[in-house]
Length: 338
Image (cartoon, rainbow, N blue to C red):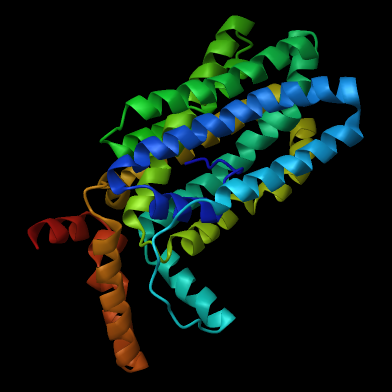
């Protein structure tokens, strides 16, 4: 599950509060369409405006767009929520960390992304232009490939708007694994048209995967915990990115560009499909609502707080809530028999 790093962790919580449950999938798809369209058109428009008016005016205009966005966001009407007493900062972080860690399916996919996201970003942002210059003969062909990827993100989001998949595990994992296709095509030195097709397929699949994943997290996470838990998720996904950028140059120099791309493609493919070996991922379904999962976890949490420390370890969510923290096929069968 490769995330869209332009997303704010609080955005998912706003979608849940503002959009009815039956319309959230479409809302997530529309958000992706808007984000990807602006990403394509904004860069092109920015280049034209810089050439015509100069960078200072463009930066000033960009600041005005942020102000306008703040005014529009302020007009979003949300239902009033129940007031809660704020805990201390450290206690609040610990509470939200428990909510994140108790959902095994969530942190497994975050680990997956912490492997795939840095590899993808480095190979496209750093090694992609180098590959275009050395292998394709210039920056022009690589620009076409990059444009095809970004454009396919819009097409994939549009597809997600019309299609709501039921096999969430396959869609999310295989959609993320599609990022290995362009790297494999680059490794094999395939014609540029094939490379453009592989990149477009990866972009559209990734958009469907991200849209599906956003809806799944919103469905299975309580409203009052969604933004905080998503913050932990986002942190885990992007934390390795700076390190991977630092290691990219020495790795390419040591292995060579083609070998490095081949290894990256294999790692992405293996990391993408590995979660499918676990029953917690294979059984992901939006049929289980976030509120029901929250009720079970809250009950377990309260029981643990009332018991002494020695007894609390026997009633942790990993034992009481197998739907969220199953430890293998035996726990899956236990849940089905219950």
